[in-house]
Image (cartoon, rainbow, N blue to C red; front, side, top):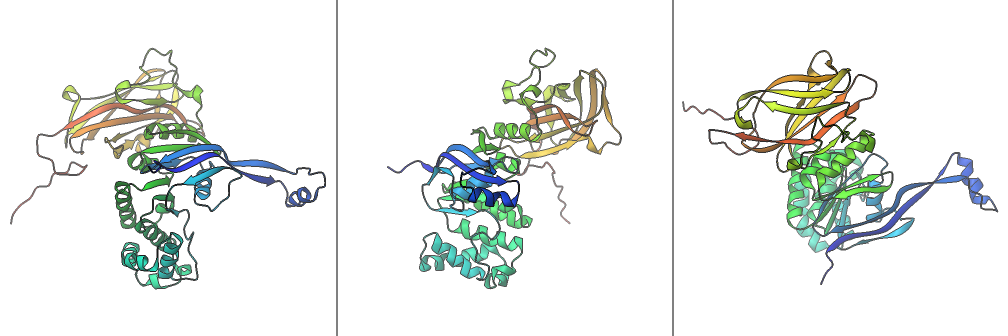
Length: 408
């Protein structure tokens, strides 16, 4: 019986020597007593990980966290300092624009070269060539040397080649962030096709929304270490956001505060912030908490502050069951500062509910922007459920915008 894993990583480390001065490299190499003039930098530090067949895994982390390094080791571009990597199946990768292309060869010649590297015969590549050319859609440039290509053309051809050859494992490192809207749309559609066919996908991106909406599992790297991983993708993104905003565990809301329930188990809420001000509730002026699609609704944001705060920003967003952001807004467009006084504060708002009927999750957050650095006060991910209904039949889509038709 075949193994159910696609990638197996055990105790993987990648260490670079850092020298303060160029001459120190020579001194260390020639020193008879092996005196060190360098210090070790761990791009990866003792990482162990197993990726199952058919999983789509998002890898997130700050710049320098080790994301690209681990992908380059998996694909054989880099050699690890210690540890091992096993790949079960044929692998294709989009690590960086132009990687794997010979700049002097034409697009067609590079297609055949990449196919050969992946183990395809010329006859098999002949059958796939037109599909690849059509997907790349770069016109006559397909017959020109790739050194003449723009970054968008590189991305088109690279994705077309690697996705059309249907590998067992596809690795993508930020390569899809270039290109126009239609190219990105085609890529996401092909992504979904590959997922349905059981292709294992490793996807590095800074777009956490894409990770939430497309990935089965998320992995958070920080300073070369595997910090956190889970199939609860949204929770991994929450942990990453705390790191990006330089918030430690001490920034969690104080559990001794009896004025507010810190987590809402009904929606599996994740919550963080300094708790110097907290969102007690967001209430809508609607019967039974039901919001009617297409209607204007009024509401109030109730905030409890422990001290006076000179300027805050409040924002919220609405997500569907797939984790897609349907709509969101914040107070940055308001002229002047929104101040909080110690005690209870109320911010009124009104909005049109132009989303289709269904159940949604409401996310909300406030931050102190009085000083040079933004301080997160209270982030509630998600805060509560929203239910939207309509008295009319609703067409497909996410936006509620009924059309009136007139026959002339």
